[in-house]
Structure formats: structure tokens, C-alpha cells
Amino acid sequence: MAETFNTDLSDTDWARLKVDFCGLELQSPLVLLSGCVGFGEEYTRVVGFSNREVGAVCLKGTTAAPRLGNALHRIYETPMGMLNAIGLQNPGVDYVVDHILPALDFSETRYIANVSGSTIEEYTAVTRRFDNSPIDAIEINISCPNVKEGGVAFGNDPHMSARVVEACRKVTRKPLITKLSPNQTSIEENARRCIEAGTDGFAVINTLMGMAIDIEQRTPLLGNIQGGLSGPAIKPIALLKVRQVYQACRAHGIPIIGQGGVASGKDALEFLIAGATTVGVGTALFYDPLLCAKINAEIVAYLKRHDLRAVAQLTGSLRLAEEVSDCVVSG
Image (spheres, rainbow, N blue to C red):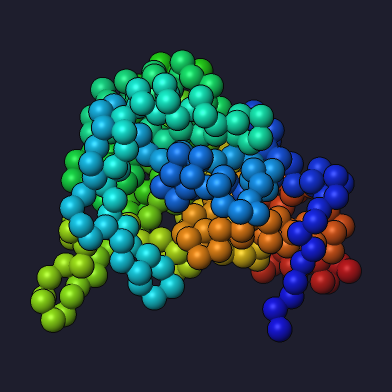
């Protein structure tokens, strides 16, 4: 029988969960990921959900002009995961800033804009528009695998990634979070270049590229042919990438949103130990929209069991085999 946890947390419990991310105090280390909760207002209507359960909400990817997205089909469920090829459907940055942001309650949680584009000029324009808004931080989506232009081309080339970050840095004083692609040769080199260009944080990782085939019709099941794979199937890869980026950027104090297949408190704890400061929850919300309360409770139970005062003590606390052996010998 699965272990159950009390989700009715005390003030002391909530104090344990607070983290600092890019200078922002978050009430929980959990972040709702872009593309999984719309523009925030849709998710808050779920009965039983409280914004206190999450430290931040990443809004849907936003471009300069409205986009209709890709042709159908856009979603396909896979074993232990999901392929999506939405194609950045959104109403455009002006509509988001003028009509959606005023309806959000910024006193309840932090909101992070997700900036997407096909050119460096578009990234810059959208970032500049969000800079003059109440948004708390800006995530730069340079690694979207389900659009035909921009996206992957920027995210898989460290030089291009750095150029996008540098251009966005010039037009905003808000914290910049760069969303890194796993579909590249060296995620560490990309991270280093983005730090030099001025990023304040990282989101690691974006989805992996994948596809699915209808064997009877012998046709792709996604209208875009390829899409982004998310869900528990990618967690081992995501953990490794978080560890690699953490090792590359810890000397600079750059925080990481660790994401990719988080579906339980144990998953979240693994990402924190690997080097994440906060943990993104996405695909799992589609089948359990009240998951965050359970994850918070599991994290608190772990902290109490290990006599830890704050979740921040877990970040990067991975012990290698020789370190564990030394502890056993000396003990």
C-alpha cells in the first residue's frame, strides 16, 4: 500500500518549503510548467486547488503576434509519457499583457512569462513588452521541439542561445530564466554561454524530440510529424541534465528549475538532490490536478525525517559512492 501524507501543512511546514529563486521568495519549490496550465486562470478554477501550493506558475508560450499552432493531431499518449505538438498557439503578447495579466492575482503566487519566437528580434520585442508588466520573471523558450522555425535551431546551438539571452537581457531588468534543450551535444557548454550572456536561472529540461506512427495508415500520428516527449519516461535523462548543468553553474550561484517527469514527492526530491533549486510539475497535472499538495507534503515529511530545516539544504546534496563510504568508515 502506498504511503499517505497529511497535506494540511502547518506554518512551520510552509516555512521549510520556502525557497529563493533569482531573488524571488517562493512559498513552495514547486513550479507549474509552461503549456500545462494555460495562462494560469484556467488551472485556478480546478476545485480543491490553492495557489499557495505552488511557488510560481509559468504562463503559456507567448509570441509577438497571435499563432494558431500546428495542424491536428497535436497530442498523443505514449507509454509513461506524452507527445505534444501544439505549435505555440497563443493570442499574442499584447493580448496577454492587456487582458490576461490584469485578471491574475499576483498576491497569491509568482507568475513567470514564457517568451517564444522565430527570430532574435521577436524574442527581444516580446521580452520588452513583458518588462513593462507586473510579471515576476521571464522564461526564454529557446528549445521548443514542435515548431518548424526558431526553437530548436536556437536552443541546440550555444552561440545562438547566448545571442538570444544577450538580446533579451538588454531590454529587461526582470529575472531571466533560460529553458535548455536536452537535444544538443553539450548542455553544459550551452549553460556556460548563457551565463556569460546574462541569464539569471535555468529551466532544465525542455521536452525531447519524438514521433509516433499509425501502422495501419503508415502515417505520422502528429500533424507536425514530430513533437516534444514529456512525462515519467524522460525523468532519468532530465535528472542527468540537471546534474550536469548544476556542476557547470554552481560556482556562479545560478538556480535551476528541475523538470521532466515529476509525478511524486520522491521525483521532486531527486531533482533537488541533483542540483535543482525548484521543481517543475507539468504532464502529471493532466491526470492529477491536485498533485502539488501531495508533493509538498512528501517533501516536508522527508525534511522532518532527515532533520532538515529548509528545502534549500537539499539542493545539490548528492553524495557520490566514495563520500558515502567515507562516512561509514569514519562513523
